Image 1 (cartoon, one colour):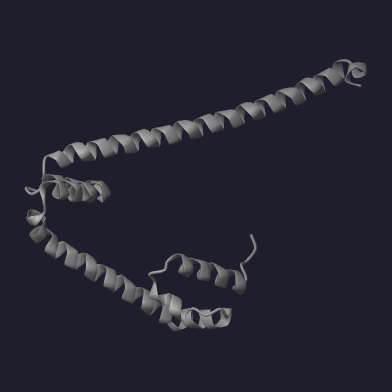
Image 2 (cartoon, rainbow, N blue to C red):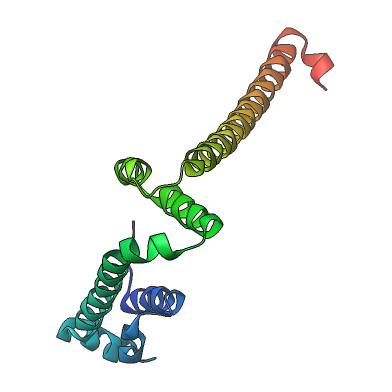
Amino acid sequence: MSKPNQNDLHRQFLGAVASNTTQPAAAAVSTDPRRTIQAIQSGVVAKAAVNELNRALSFANAIGQNFAAVLPTLGEQTRIEVVAALARAASSKDRRSIMEHPQCPPEVDAIVEAYDAAKAEASDARKAERAAEREAKERAKFEELRRKFEVGKATTDNPAAAE
C-alpha cells in the first residue's frame, strides 16, 4: 500500500469539509495545501470543530429542557407524530424510555411497531438479494471451472476432438 501524498490528503480534507456545509472550519481552509495543513496543525480547524460541537450540544440541551413543557400544548395528531418520530430515531434504551413516558400517546406504539416491521422487511429483502447475488457468482464460478475441467479432460482423452 502506498503512502498518500500531501495533495491527496488535502483533496480528501477539502472534500470532507465541502460535504459538511455547516462546519465553520471551511473558512479556515484555503485552496493551497500548505495553508490548509498549517491551519490543521495550528488548531484552527480543531477549535472550529469544537465550537460547532458545543453549539450543537447547546441546541440539543435547550430542546430537551423545553420539550417536556411544549409537548402537552401540541395537538393530539402532532403530538403522536412528534413522539413517534423521536421513538423511531432513538436507540432501543431511549425508545423504551420514550414509550414508557406518561405523556406518550398509546397510538405511538403501533406506529413504531409498523416502522420496525417495515425496516426488518427491508433488511431481510436486502439480505436475500445479497445472498442471491452471492449464489449467482458462485454458480458462475462453478460453471467456469466445470467448463475448464471438461475442456481439459476432452483434450487429454481425445486430442483430435479438441482441435
